[in-house]
Amino acid sequence: MANETVLEVDGPDGVRKVRISHPDRTVFPESGLTKLDLARYIEAVAEPFLRASGDRPVSLQRFRDSIDGEQFFSKNPPRGTPDYVRSVMVVYPSARSHPQLVLDEPAAAVWAVQMGTVVFHPWPSRAENTDNPDQLRIDLDPQPGTDFGDAVPAALRLREVLAEAGLEPYVKTSGNRGLHVFAPIRPEREFLDVRHAVIAAARELERRMPQQVTTAWWKEERGQKVFVDFNQANRDRTMAGAYSPRALPHASVSCPVTWDELESVNPHDFTVLTVPKRLAEVGDPWADFGERPGGIDVLLSWWQRDLDDGLGELPFPPDYPKMPGEPPRVQPSKMVAENWDESGRRVD
Image (tube, helix red, strand yellow):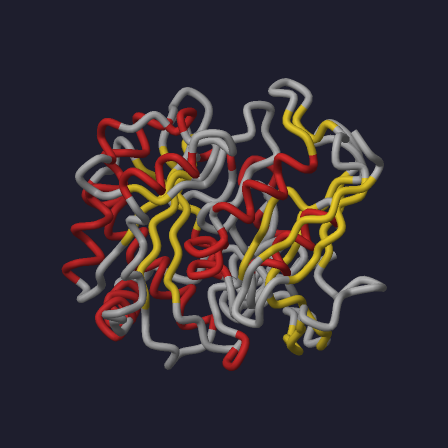
């Protein structure tokens, strides 16, 4: 194969020619899929992919060679970014501001593959309002000793919890062992409020499934349960987007599914090779996502109820600044009480 291939990618402004260098480079060694295969996959699923992940700040998980090699995350527009790929200024937890890439058309997504992208991580907020999420996202992460089959009943019960709070949830496979439950919300609240809404929903789910689900941040306390990863709701924390490939040997895809089919699906069946055919046959289960956004006031009332009952803030990611009300950032098994003050700060 030639050392370069040019794809003619159709889009809202007509056809753009996107150069794919080293098209025969193997990206997924186990399945033999190449860089060109990946570019053609993104082109094939561009419409539902961009409906889910377009018009949002996006982090690109890029690889210099195959998924077995060096990887890094790219947020700022790299040198040589085409003029049809825009960016938007975002504020990170450190309070620094930087431009972050935004994908608006199929050629932009294919160009990202040219740049070595395998996994696309969109923000839960849109480019025009980056500080206020329009998606509430909950990551159901099976812990050692559990698997996808354990995440399914947790997702179904979580659907009930969110419906009681006035939200309409959607579900997709994570591309690995877990499930992602998303609900469209009105962009009225900032990230900390949405985090608290997620924690409230997670605690309610834990109450209803105490033997199957946990909100314990420290791994040593989780046991063989499904962890509800509330910290994925924080600013600059993202999940693989809908229809994004994952950097796993079988070239799996984070694939939207219907609630009716959830109990019968096998997440390993959704791959770069199979998802385009699935879309052609059954369509996109998330095609109407966002048409009926809800609010998080009910969940925030649950959060306040739990605060009044003595349940406080939960730990933040380790790279975050110390947050108000946060418990000490130390494993419970290593914590010596006299070394910490009431605000969770270490006392030397």
